[in-house]
Image: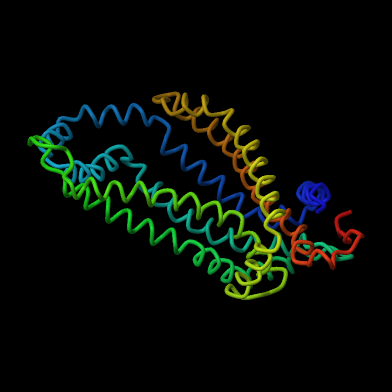
Length: 328
């Protein structure tokens, strides 16, 4: 497997193929806007939080809560008091998150089509966008099918958690904190929790293969999953290596992004006349974080696009030569 050539080709596309950034520009703008809204919501958070906890109304409600369920019911009250006039910004952020989610499906298909190897000429970005729009629904269905086990497990654990909370006696009452039924359900949760990790790792390795099959071979969601499973089973070693490579790159970029964590912590405490400068700094840092995160995501799409033809080809049929890349 030519991992070095795939990484080099992916980096060349990311840094030299302008069409890639044209295709992900709307997504980048939305992600930066979310960063900006996050700053508007978070700046001054600590002072607002302390104000809520010192509110006599909140203290009376907290003292009057006799069960864990009644304590949970205070969360909306805390949330509304902390956000205040920023609540519409939060609602806007939720809407933008949905748009980002949808545009990610379009952008992934478009970028993969734009960077597919084996072509003498690079396609126009309009052609790649058309393919991205055409493949978006199929990519969504792939994500949904792979997420179903986690959704079922999550709902099951939520019901178990609610039953566990309801089985607890009054906070002010005596006796053990959790009854035998609750203890048993807690044990079940501990057994089920590792399944999330296992399926999450499998999905991270398997999903890119299904998306490549969907875009490069124009297959529907189920056909793409079937093809990806054959590739996953026959090429498990290279698939794991690719996953590790991408994980290390994401870890490195994540470490770069975390450099600003102390600054973000300081900005959260800004209030009064310092709130506006804090927002400006947050917005500037948000651009850097958005470019880093989206750049790594696009690199992953391109990397698997370079690897897909060789991963899908049986080992005994692999050609000795490389593929033609349209990036100059």
